[in-house]
Image 1 (cartoon, rainbow, N blue to C red):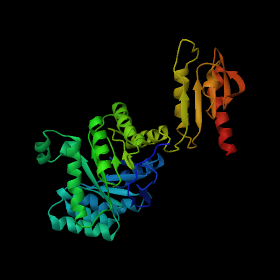
Image 2: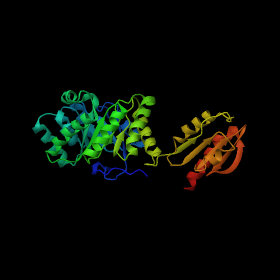
Image 3: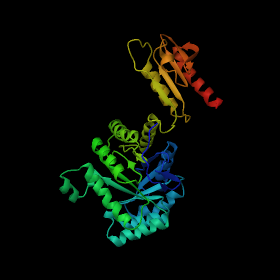
Image 4: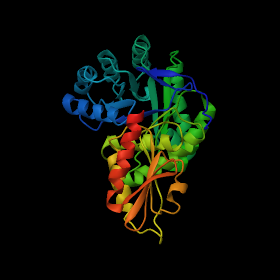
Length: 354
């Protein structure tokens, strides 16, 4: 069991963040926020995949004014991502947004910050301070000579102090970079500096293949240390993939039950079936199942059932035939061609039994 660092709790809509609440998964739409239909469809797809919070880009007033139309059609908390123009934040709050992502230091003078904070307080709207290594203030770059973990923390703390000066503490913090060791160090340092909830992420991680690896390493390392209250996997492409990867990371750390777990042995010289093809087919068909069961696909009838004893159900292939087993106990022997169908018959039986 991973012992999580204690942070204060905030709420984004009905989702609790920090304070011992379950770690939440966030993603971001890549549709135009002015396109209600496309944005709502994507939000619903993200929610169906296991997303808890969705962020939307609000680059202009037309987007801000359309937030209400989107909010009416979904039932998941939405966060407005805003830069520079404080009026967009005010309108997003007016439209019923659940949270803001902005940096108070870049939305203008003190009066503008006060205006946003006053409305956020009145509507119980939390604010996420988001620091990105790619847009670090030139003063801090000059001070440290390059982007460092301390520079990221210093940047975040400047924004934190602006909000705290307005007696506003309903916030969470993120410090993102594409450099994994730098990001880990920055979050470690921040977790020792404040008790605000932390939103994790490896920004600009890349395409699905490389981005999954960088995100799993960086975010997984932090979560395993008990650091982090919510996070996003940032990938180039379909944001639904981000959500699936995020939930797989949580599942692999024992921090969330999320759909089936596939246990598949590596191939070796003893393998006499198309193990890779069978495992791929099983994995694909498991996507339609929501129940958190463990399913094993093993390539050896001699050791397979024993090696996957903890699996709820599984198959082990031999030469022209294979075994179907549950909890390591062999149920029956079937032809190799029937292995996948027989496996899913048992999966259906397990689902019906519950």
